[in-house]
Image 1 (cartoon, helix red, strand yellow):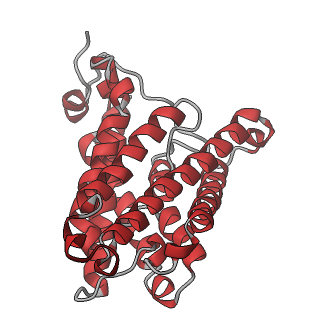
Image 2 (cartoon, rainbow, N blue to C red):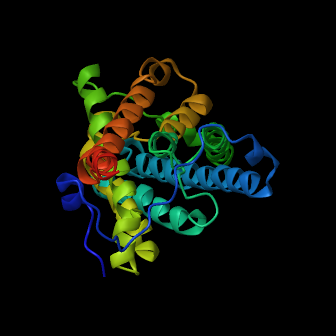
Length: 287
């Protein structure tokens, strides 16, 4: 098999590659609007985000009810799934849903992931916008299902909405969202890198696993700070259905932070790890 291209790019030479980078997606692909595959992918993103919000928000509310000292008394501290269980619910659902939808829509389930992949020219602008709309609508519907099934507890226990915890500044919350989303999107790029899958044929099958683990680990770190957003659709959908002032006051953090984190992860992977700029310069010199 051929050697990698990075060293050759720095020397201004080309050697054979053992992997093939897909061509960049067009910025605006109007013809895409006439294909069923686009709408099938949009539907998959809607349903996946709906299921994601339903399971995760229900888990959060269930835990808060089970650990409520007014309900369980002295056993409250030991009741429910705990923060570890909540983190598993988020990470596990991402693993399941990415596995189920990767072959249809790419398994984004997150506007920040879609934004990062758009910056890397993995998806067109039209597809990215439709995905984000579908994800937000799916999140609203998923949170709405939880409220419909748990009317007695939904508002009492915060509706699963992301809020900045007391004792933390808005800057700290924003930084937590940036770093958390960086970890997630960086993992997405690494797990789906064609350079990696060319050498390890099992990687495409296992790609949902590290992505789910990234979500799990980030939740362990940032649940005490912001409740962990790293997904603007998740934060927006819960806020729409909960619709209380505190959730809206901090909502900007859960959009700005993830989008900045996704952009940094895309730049780091594309221009540092994959050395896209060096490759382009080497190609120009060899020509």
